[in-house]
Image 1 (cartoon, helix red, strand yellow):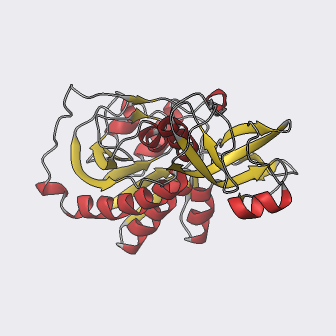
Image 2 (cartoon, rainbow, N blue to C red; image 1 turned 120 degrees about the vertical axis):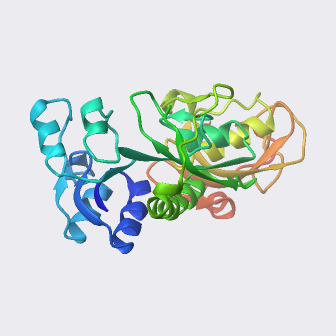
Amino acid sequence: MRIVFMGTPDFSVPVLDALVAAEHDIVAVYCQPPRPAGRGKKDRPTPVHARAVDLGLEVRHPVSLKSAEEQAAFAALNADIAVVVAYGLILSQAILDAPTRGCLNIHASLLPRWRGAAPIHRAIMAGDAETGICIMQMEAGLDTGPVLLRAETPIGTEETTAQLHDRLSDMGAGLIVQALTQIDDLPPQTQPTEGVTYAHKIDKSEARIDWTASAADVDRKIRGLSPFPGAWTEIDGQRVKLLASRLTTGNAAPGTLLDDTLSVACGDGAVQLLRLQRAGKGAQDGETFLRGFPLETGRTL
């Protein structure tokens, strides 16, 4: 097929690679524009942009697709279909209608649960037992279109957003290739009206740990916000990110360090901190962290 690929972050790269490997004709790659990054604040191309250049594909990164000129340029590609995954711009009806077979979106949840911007984070933070990938026919609403294909996967009890992100990215790559192969035999399934939830964008204000919450909630927040923005607590006036954890046993006043393995009491139960990061330092496992930042049992975080 003649495909326009539309994606921006790391999550989208395996999908682009899979489409190229399946010998589809990628007529153009759309992504977000380069933006200042790093210490020098120089413009840095997005992961999809960089990968598309490596593959010798045409890259376009308009700030908006609302103008008649941009819509005409998109339509002139004469694509059979557009594949969209974490692109970052809302597509107008003119864009949705331009490819012969419309636009397919790869969404990282089991729709209609977790429509919106942060489905992986929210699934872990909510304690969902499973999640998955949906291949959805796009329409004007936010992730409301009919689903052509879906695949489920359990969420591990110690899995972080980073780990689940990578698994779902690979799942999405395989599933879109399958969907394109079988597209004439995949009747669109209208999403049910029951069970709709929205995965609102993660706000940094959510990231501070409240040790009076249950251990289950604390553990889910730590894993769900890892690696970005990273849940955090204060120790000796320093902000420390908490990047991995597991549930454990123990009771004491919330925030009390229970032992020398970084088990911390919560409002109900306890969590063990497995990976931490001090400001200006790299992420470390618990044992390494304690060698450089000793903490006595019984102190309060």
